[in-house]
Length: 456
Ligand code: GLN
Image 1 (cartoon, rainbow, N blue to C red):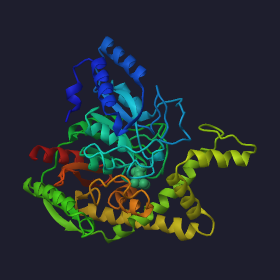
Image 2 (image 1 turned 135 degrees about the horizontal axis):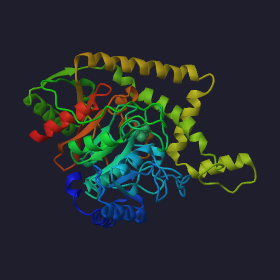
Image 3 (image 1 turned 180 degrees about the horizontal axis):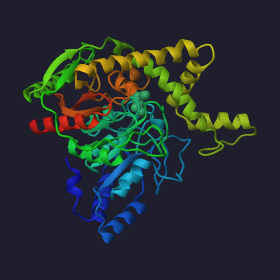
Image 4 (image 1 turned 120 degrees about the vertical axis):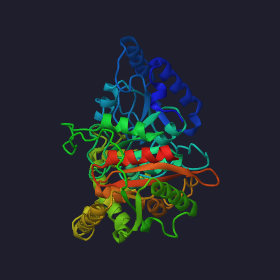
């Protein structure tokens, strides 16, 4: 697979043209919803002309279509934003561009990032990069697939409950969900504000360090951002690593467990101490997530009313305008979450559901913190199975939600977690291993992954 360095030193125009050509050759994957071709070529010509020397000068990338960008639409893969042109760019995009990176197009996703397969896109699913009969994973399915297909050396996405890690694992690339607050959420379509994070897909750990270092840091437009702390780190020797017992049960696919165990053997061979750890509270993580996140979704999606922006339905009265615009503009999964969220926040149910979920969330965070008093890193699979078949889970939302069981805990607790390729199943499907660390240990996780990559 290509690395960022393979693009450096060549002409930006040539890089962009090659990426656009590759993207068009692979159009049937439905990984890209729109191109910003004219703007990309213009920026590339400018970079070639002025000899810009940014850390990503002339390197093409793709952004999930929930990042506001110039030069094309930002749809969030929904009908309600089908023709929406952003008046500003996300901070993450601005920072990448300041280093000379060039956005060539916008990647497919589950509408508003609600989902784990990209089948909830209003514009059709993305196909898995390795097996076209299977899902790309989601919600950042398109970003994972363009990276795995070598269309671009990196792509960016959002991870609210696994949307970077799970598609990274399903397509055999690196996926980084940083500590909550690492990268500004300004200019990114909000899903659940208390767990939304911005991260990247790359083909190796060093490239992920570079892209995260560029995007990270304080932004006056997002008061939850942390002061810059990223920066590549040296790997710590003899780390204490815990394998999460609850993620290695009989319900988990045998080959997934085997690949994870092999990765753990490499950790041991590299001199780290690995022990089994137990976090019994993990059994509540999905229940907490599917109360807290829909609650925040129902509130964040209230802004799409057909009045201020987005699709406006033909209607005779204001109430009808709201109703029709929203019912035509959202997909089923968006509506399901708005309904669940409104329910758990309604008077009479707020105490029973939302408040209880927030209390349980605090207990989950405490349990993680206690483990991190002893352990540097926790390890386990990213997903209980490799990529599933298209259509296999899409008619059963609960089955789909269950697939998120291993990624939502780090999201609820704001901890960094990365997905690292760990080999394939006998039939060639990629399997990812997940490394979870204490808040702000992102760079240390990547250093560990980089070190073990060298041993692979
Ligand atoms: N699959 C999870 C969900 O549907 C995660 C989504 C995300 O991280 N955006 O909520």
